[in-house]
Image (cartoon, rainbow, N blue to C red):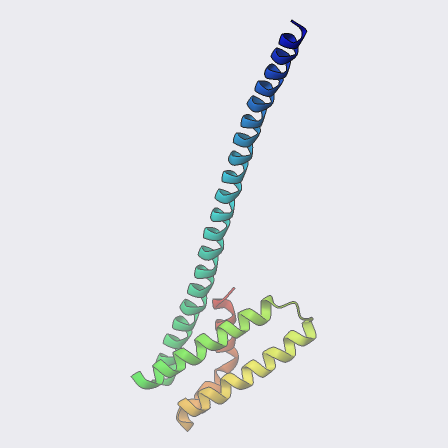
Length: 149
């Protein structure tokens, strides 16, 4: 009789532990599913934001290039090259702005980026176009920076 009682107690304990274990496993599976869903959502948002950032740079480059085409009377080949220069420039400006560098380092980098852009544009534009570009440079640079903010 005592053995029977001990067996019943042991069996009841095992059943209770099994029941609790099943619920713990279900809770754990639910938590894992929730975390996987949250990570997937985070990845989707990050991808969307990154795509929007790229679109912003591309749109800014298109806008500024269209203005330059009008101002400088660019031919189709020049327009394509200027668009590439502007897109590259804006991407680097955006990266510089988002870097962890100090204000002085960012300013030096911007100066280097401006010189790089000017040199590339000088090789694409005619002497007359480049002279006009240089005269309008302050206004064009302001528009470029506004386009990525």
